[in-house]
Length: 322
Length: 155
Image (tube, rainbow over all chains, first blue to last red):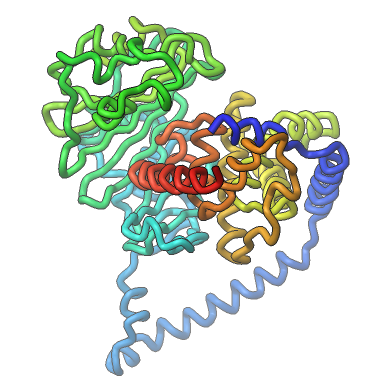
């Protein structure tokens, strides 16, 4: 794929295209700075009309319920009351934000257990055009700034992911117990997200950053069928130091097929040496330090996938082994 | 609202990364430019508190990808001409690779681009695209097979 990289590197916006882009941004942002009261008045009028209509509808509901059941009406009548204020939801303390950092003292309700997200949801994608991924049902925030836009991939029953504070991540049942206690110096918590999986379990992802390009990305899952762990007595199957790059040309096929790229280690087998064996020398990307990719299978069936950039071998081992 | 210099810096820092990702997904330069413009505009509107240029880039990349998905869904736009006609490749190897990637379905193209060009891990791609890691892996695996086949055919 080096040829593809070279090709892509050759593509750039021309100065004219950049100027056009900047001008368009300036024009559109300037236009949005000029508020018009007309849309607000129209929205208020529509809202009042809607409320009036709802009032009439509710007052007539008992009589209508005796008629033939309307599946849509039935579904709506059983839905919880929507609120537009995230702080008003039962799980508001679990949402990330400057004023929601308190640690829940008691049993923590799962953050996605509230049946209806507290913000309006716009489904922007359903059923991939190419038909692939049709069995993959997920409803996750697709909008990094607010989580108000969700994507449905596969059209299955909706569920929701939620942004969490670090404390809320740690408090999650099962998965939270595997969140590292301490991070290397300079790294701080950046984000945590959790949601339900298709097997009735849940997933949790966390990101720590050093403020530059160093990062620790951890994904915790509890799959119904745990992945096959690696035999740590055979370093040739997972030690990245034994092979020169590019692996596409130099890695034996049997090693590649054995899960070399993303090996799974039993927690019981994990040692500093095993973690160190996954540190790619001289390949920390733009960050200093090394890059690590591996998974850990814990005795309780939880799988932790680590994607680390910018740590030394000893720092990575300390992070994972605690 | 950023002033003109801030806006220029914002565009300069991110334009090509975003444009290439949009182009990889949409295949159409005009649509790709629109998707990038939408992403910048959304950042200006939302003005999220982003800690660093890297956060800024990740935020913009995710919004760009979402805009690309919107465009694919609503317009079903596909390139009417090979990408290499808009952006000629420097050599035959680059042309073959670009054409092979362009022949993939849009979502596979995007995953291939993020993995092989952008250097994202599977987990990072999952976070950016909203797909599960398993879906990303299967897309990558399927794309590799197709690419191998296409590149063998072209040689």
